[in-house]
Image 1 (cartoon, rainbow over the protein chains, first blue to last red):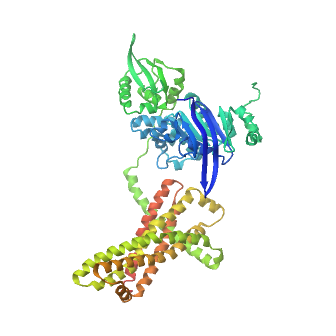
Image 2: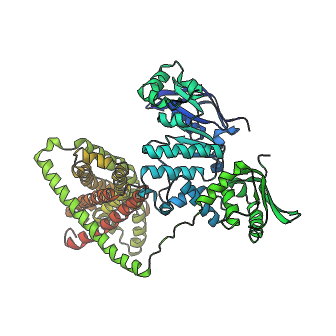
Length: 262
Length: 375
C-alpha cells in the first residue's frame, strides 16, 4: 500500500442536466496521506459531496482516476468493502426495516462466519462507544432523533474498524454539545485505530478542532491543500471569505489558544 | 507483515503453559472461512484456564474491536492475571472491557396480548372507515367550494393528473383489452360452434365486455397503476415533510391534493373504460371472424340489437364510481403513511389491494341493484 490512502489524478466531472453540461471538477488532483484527518471545504455546489461519492466509487468520474487504498475506486464496492471503508452519510442512511442493533451489526452479520453472540457484543460496544445508551438497542430508526441517527450511522460505519472513514457533514444537525463529543470521539478513534478520515464539513469549529489537513475546493479544482494554518493564510478569494470572516476568526482562535505561546 | 492471518498458540514456559497471539486480529481477517473455526476452537480451549495462564499479546500486528471482543469473551469478561501487550493495543481492550454489556432483552408478547391485539384490529378497521368517511365528506365540501369559485380551482394539478392517469394509460389498457377480447371470443366460439349457435357470439361478447369486463378490467388496471402512484406520491410528501410544509402555509391538503386527483380519476375512468371496451370488442370481432366466419359487418350490425344502450350507460356510471373509489382509497392510504420508508411500502400495497377488492365488491353491488336494467 502506498503512503497515500486516496489518490485523485486529473479528475474531471461533468453533469448533464436538461441537455446543458455543468462542469463540476476540472483537472482536480488530490492526495490524502494515510493517517491524515482531512477536511474538504468549499462553497455550496462546489462538488464536495460528489468528490466523496467518487472516492467511494458510487459515481464514475468523466475523466481521470481515483485510487483508494491502492485500488481503483470502482472496485471498492466489492465483497468485504465494509472492512476497507466506512461512510457516514449526511442523513444516516440507516436501514429502516432493521433495529438499531441490527443496523450496526449488519456488515458483520453479512459475512455469515462469526457467531451471533460475538457480533451482538461487538455491536453493543460500538453502540455505547458512540455515546448511545444500551436501552436504544432495539429501537427502530424511525423512533430516533437526528443526532441519534448520526451516532448509529457512525457506529455502523465503524463496525469493522475500516482503515478509511468518510464523513459527509458529520456534525450538521447536532447540538453543540453532541458535536463536541463527536469531535472527541473521532479524535480518539483516529489516534487509536490509525484511521484515515476524510470529512466534508461546513462547521469551522469541527474543522479546526480535528483536521490535520484541509483541502479547499473552488473553481472546479483544489485551490489549497495542507495544514490548517497554511491553508487559511491562502490568498484565494474563497479562502479569504470562508476563513477570515467573523465566524472564521472565532473558530480559528482554536488554533491559537490565548496564553499558549507557539 | 500487514496481512498475516490471526493465530493463537500454546507455548511452554518454565512456569507452565501460556498463550501467545500473533497476526491481524481484525474483523475482516477473523471472518475468513478458513480462519474462524480454528480460532474459535483455540479460544474455547483456552477459556478454561484463561485467567490463570499468562497471555502474550505483543506479537499482534493489529487488533480491532472484533478481535478484542473475541478475546474478552474468551477471558469471561475479566482481565487475566498475567497479560503482556503493546501499549497501542491497550485502549482497544480497555474500551471493549468498559462497554461490554448484554443486549437488552426484547419483551415478547404473551398469548393474552396477542389475543387482545385481535380486538385492536377491529379498531384499526373502524379508524379506516372513519378516515374514508371524513375524506369523502371533505371532498364534497371542497367540490361545493369549487362550484362557488371555479376560477380559484387547482386546474393545473387537475390537467396534470388527467394526463398521467388517463392519457398515459391508453396503450396498456388497449393491449390488455384486445388480448382478453381475442381469448374470450376464441373460447366462446369453440363452445357455440358445437350447437351451431355461431350468431350468439355477438350477444355474449357484447353484454359481457360492455357491461362487465370493460369497466372492471380498466378499473383494476388503473387501481394497480394510478392508485398505487397516488398513495406513493402523497406518502413521499409525508416522509419528506412536504405535507407539514403545506399545512404551515395554510394550504388545505383536501382541496389541493385529494380533490384534483379524485376529479381527474372520475373523468378519466369512464373514458378509459370505454376505450378498453372498444379494444376488447375489436379483438373479439377479429377472433370471431377468423375462427367462425362471423364477419365484422354482421357483428357491428347485430350489436345494437343484442346490447341495449342502457348497458353502456350503466358501464359509464359504474366507472365514475370506480374512479372516485380508487382515488379516495389511494389518498386515504397516502395520508396515513408514517414518516418512514417501511410504512410507505406497506401503505402502497394496502392501497392497491383495498382498491381492487373494493372495485370488485362495488361491481357485484351494481350487478345486484341493476339486475333488471338492460338485460
